[in-house]
Image (tube, rainbow, N blue to C red; front, side):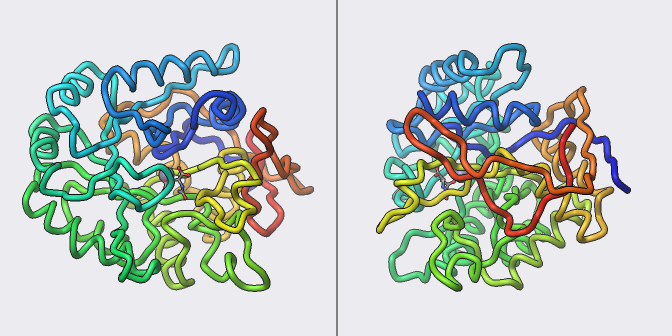
Length: 344
Ligand code: NCD
Ligand code: ZN
């Protein structure tokens, strides 16, 4: 097969930032994707309905002329989130979900939740109104090894939370372990997003032969057995797993740094990378489900009306190595192999 037409995809986990960075990276996503869930970890974070409305407006203004891309907004859950403000934002359609960052887990997560007990009233309200919770599933306990933080989060936080609030609809984001995949498979009211880069890299890619800051993201890539479990889940056709790229731009000086930021920028070449991965696993027929159908079904919205066509070329597709922004360059994710599928 050298041509594949699928429903226009959506990205169920995306960082767009703000200002000049937003203007530079938004076209990279809007080119192929119909919608994206927009992460609220700005500085300061998107906490209230008013913040989300204002951020949405800035995104709409930054969209390229003629683009019909739709940003799906989220609120950043804090221990001080007002349940009434959140409920009104959800019920009016302003927000699609609420994002939970354990405080200190990742980039711009300082305002996140420290004591989960303090977040219970708002989580109870979300369960009652059907508002989905997107979870960054890593514990922050310094005594827990960084490669174990997702598995420990499942045991210590996620499973008890689901027992207490079985009606709360939870998206476990950027699943990086077999533990996460198996946990999702075993439960109700839970689904998981998988990133493009976690289907491609394992922790050796970050550390062997010199440290590769552009492969460093959170949750950090794990060992190969976990990557293979993610591949199996993504290409299985199981509707509980779908694409959330977690494309997270940082300028090169902040990545190539003695204390480099976490985040891989994959918006530009994600669909080419995914077509490569799915073809390699003999599952091109499952790509549409993963990238275009399962996520919209989970969030209860219709699939996009438009289509995209992926075409396999005989020569590698050329992508820019970097996107230039007024703040500096952002390196595009390098899968480490040539890409032959292009989006037309
Ligand atoms: C994200 C970012 O840069 O905002 N970084 C990352 O490594 N994925 C935050 C996040 O989603 O963890
Ligand atoms: Zn993210």
